[in-house]
Length: 301
Image (tube, rainbow, N blue to C red; front, side):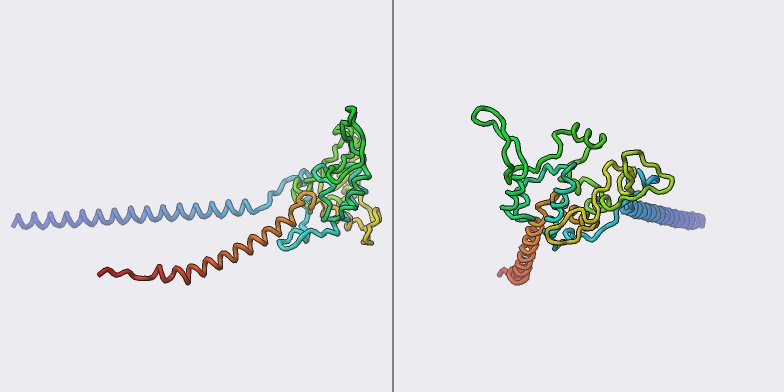
């Protein structure tokens, strides 16, 4: 009897031990699963928060320090299947030549770059010959002046930076070749800057010699307003309003920053067309040529 009682007691203890281990294992698994779920949820929240932060525009407590953010304008040349308005490029060059070239250079653009874009070859030759370039040396070792050629780059308004600052009250007029790429907002910023001159609001004092423009960082710019209605007379009869001239010169500077854009879009369309054809051929070969080989059975006797 005592032996049976001891055996039954031992079995009961074993059953309790098994149940305890099972409960411990289940509890540990549940705890591990909960920890895993919590870590995954935390990772998801962190990812969503990071994406939301990256998608937000940074807001400065003092927006005047960075300038007013320029609105987005529907520029036609920014569309995937659109090119530059070459008539606008021609008008924009006229605005640059008659207004902007007195202070700003265009170092990266040669006269030949205008051929076939906004002017004919004969027109470009005539434009280049209006300027004198230093060349040489000649047969006796002296430098000489000659009329410009299409291969020459557009002349600079000043001989050096010191002369440019002396003629602009200490301010240095930047080169405009890559201005569209160099400024945040690109074409939107340049257009807004050219049309954004206004009287300073109440409480804002502008130092003498500066002008208020909310789109310029700090709000005070050394360049005065230069575009006024009727300032230039377009060859094609387009009304020379302030906004029209600002739009045309902005398109011209956009072309100057990316003169290869039209050719790049054309090449991209050719590449996409070729990729589409090759993709169709690949699908055809996969379904109609290789399908029989991949699904056949090989029997050994």
